[in-house]
Structure formats: C-alpha cells, structure tokens
Image (cartoon, rainbow, N blue to C red):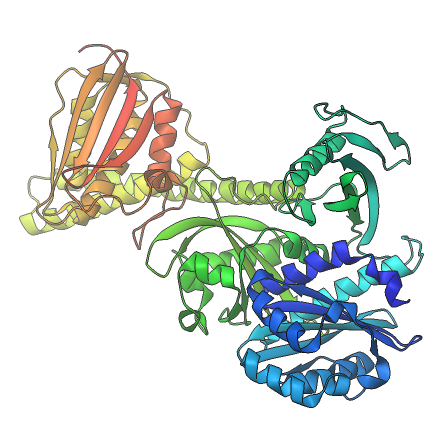
Length: 636
C-alpha cells in the first residue's frame, strides 16, 4: 500500500478519529501512515474544537503537519517508529520521545513547555501480517491512560487497520479473513449554486436525471441527499458528514454516511453529495466501535473489573454536573438512582444476550442530587486471553417523551421480551402458590381475633399479624396483576363503604400507626368496576400515602360525580413528590427502601382496564394528590 492510496479514505477515517477521541476523553487522535517501500511518513489529524488552540501552537512552530512528508530514516529513534516496528503500545508525556529527531529537539522542548502537561499513547494500526501505521491519542495531564482506555484504543486501531486493508486489497468476502467494514460509494450527485440537481449516478451505475431548484426527485433517498446538499449550499461550510442510523441497527449495507462537500468552479459553487456505505460482516461488538465514534456525542466512562470509574470524557462531566475529582475511583453505581441497576444492566448484556452491546433505560443521578432518565449501554473489554479488563459504559440522556433504547434491534428486543415473559410467568405462578396458604392463615387469624375470650395483649399481636398478612397479600396481587392473571367483571361498587373497609384493614399495619385516614365521600357514590380490583387499587394508594406522611398526619379521601364519571381525590400532608409524576407509574420505580415499585403501576392498570385513569400531582398547600377517575355506577 502507498500512502497516496489511503488518502481518499479521509471522509471515513477523520470522523472516526475525532469521534474516538471524544468518546475516550482525548483531545485529538492522529493517524501516522508509514510506507516502508517509499520510505515516507504522513500524518492525518483528527482534532476536535477543544484542541484547536493547541494545534495552532504546534503548527505555528512546526508548520502544517498534514501537508508534510517525513522520511522514515528521520523517525527511527522515535517512539512512533518503535510502536510501528514492534507492533507494541507505547506511552509518554514527552513530545521529544514521541517524535525523536523528526523535528529539532529545542523546538519540541519549547512546545512541551507551551502546551503544558500532556499524555500520548501510540497504538500500531495493523491487519493480519501488515502494519499500516500508528494511532497517536493525546489528552491533557500526565496521568497514564487506563488499562480500559488502552484496550479500547487497540480495538479502534484494529478497525482502522481493517478499513485501510479493505481499501488496498481485493478480497473475497467469504474467505476466513473477510473484513468487517468495506467502504464504498453507493450514490453520488451534484447540485449547482442555484439549488438545481444537475445529475449523478446511483448504486447500479444508472444516471440520476436533473431537476429544477424547486423540484423534489421521486426517489426518497436521492431527495434526502438533494435536500441536504441544498441546505449545505445556503451555509458557508466546506464539508459535512452525516452518519445515517447512527443510534440504531443498520440494514443492508451496514453503516451509511452522507458526505457533502463544496467545490469551487468557474460557474460558481457546486455541491457534491455522496452516500458512502461500510458493510459489516460480524465480529462481536466490533461494528459498534465505529458506530459509537461516528454517533452524536454521549457521556462515556471506562470502568475497571470492580466497576470503579477510571476515565471519562467531557460530556460525562457536563451530563452529571461533576468535576473530575468526584469521579475518579468512584463506583459507577453512585451515578444511578438505584446503584444495583448497573449490575443488572451488565448481567443482562453479557449473560443473556449475544450481541455484546445494547442500550436500556435507567434513572441516573447528577452531582446535585437531581435525577434524569437515560439510555445506558456497555461494551465488555477483554484482552487477547479473554480476561476481563473492564467496561466502556455509554450514557445518553432521554428527553421528555424520548424513546428508550433505540440501539436494540428487533431480534434482541424479542429475545428480551420472551425472557421477561417467561420470568413473569414463573413469578406469577410462585406468587399464586404462596398466596393460597396466606389466605388460609389469614382466615384463621380472623377467627381467632373474633374470640371474645382473647386477651387485649394477644389481640394486638394477632391484629398486627393480620395486618402484615394483608400487606403481603396485596404485594402478591401486584405481581399477579402485572402478569395479567386477573380477569375481573364490573358491577356497581359503593365507594364510601369500600374505602371504609380498606381503612379498617389497614389499621393493623405498623405504617398506619399514629396516622389517620379520613373519608369525606358522599353517600351513594358508586363506580362500575370489579370490587376486589377496586379494593386493591385503594389499598395501594392509601398505603403509599400513609407511608409518606409523618406521624400525626392525615390522608383525606373525597369525591364527586362528574357526568358519567366519578372523580376521587386522595390527599395527604406529606412531603409531596420529589420526581416527575409519570415516573412514579413506571414498573419497579420506588423511593422506598423496601418497596417493589409495582403499586402505582397496578393502580393505573386497574383504572385503565375499567375505562378510567389515575394521576398524581403536588398540592399547592403541600403534600400530594392522587386523582382516580372511574365510570359512574349509578346512584345509590
């Protein structure tokens, strides 16, 4: 391979270099191409905006690096050449060690002092028996790159080696050394300064007909490219690259990127738009490296095998509102509202799925204590001997109404649903088997409590036992409800009598001691619903309320007829909601140390099944209000 042969890969390699640097918290990534046949060395620089001042300092002293050709005999005493020659990773904090005598020693020393503390790591870019060059990643400070960063950088070097190899060798894709990414141009078209499509070629080699400035081509893909070219024409940029389907599974030709560039001509500007494809042919987790590098910026952290944070990128500091000192060495679980969530995510990704990477939703915690929903994905990092080195964790904040985990493809989602369904069936069967003896024990306790010869002290003990059995029974009903086991029939139910019964049954619970449930429901107010299901709904709502209010607090239940609906209000004088109301209805969401997180989910499910609704809101005077809307069951 000659260096010139690989130069046209810039539209693919440059964004991968910049994206990989951003992903790992580096300032820049440089690809140094080495051609031993011609004895030439050249540099491609993937610099981010934050590193531009440093780059200007370097080029002010050393000249434009990408325009220079270096001779191999001038770099043989450098760590870059040692990395290339030995195919070994090297690291340094000295530019003089990195570059050797390729530049004057005094100039490099001056640069070291101007730039301040920097750290450089060099990784060989190779594929098979061929070595094409060296990747140099740079970050601020003198702290060494973590083992996890180095492992991931080695993977990126391997991916770039495969891309260069694919471009410089013609190989059959059904051989054992088939490549993971094969870049090629699918479609290319041109738009003139007036916004007219002046022609192009599609993937079959057929010409693309011209179109006026206000005409939209019938082919949606070409229309999208033309639209991008016209919008680009209205700006001032020289080139842009847009990865298609960066956050989701890619079909057909794998990764696709539109490259739009401005070309000056005698007749004015011309915009060239190219659809570039990089077909993927496997390799556990390999394709995700390129996709993550090219995708939009996200917070990424590197973890050691004990799930302690070893490194991060700038997006992490911004997302979690933390400084570097508060992250270094911290357990990743501290960034989650429920610390055990990350262990569950890792277990599901690496024990149950075969793809090596997917994203799922979780609730995370910022440094100021606030929480937010996010998609969390992880990539297992293992060395050549399959020993776990650590993990790459990638976190994207979900906007309100955002769709969780778009990176999970249809097959993975189906597998997860089937496993969850199986686990749900097992849990429901277990809950059903446990509930049967509980009902029998509860009936015996009821009979014993009614014994007139029972002493006061024994009666109190039995009342507490009966209350705990009632609570356990309701928890089991929650699981059975989530499994869809209940098939209730609707009938008119008197709300006042039902709430009074629920309050009486809750009186024996420890959580209700010293708290009052007051019912202001008017007589004769009825709703159309299964009575047992409604009892379950109000037990959960009232239990939530009494567990949150302080001792001496009150929960008030009131209601009114609103046309064909009945509106019931459950008000408490507790601290109110500390999160978004809708978040409380998510399955397994709980703010209690011993909660299941199913109570409110089941309440909404029961109300929805009856044609009603349940909502939560904070009251102006303090505390929380739950509003239950149900179909009216007629007057008493």
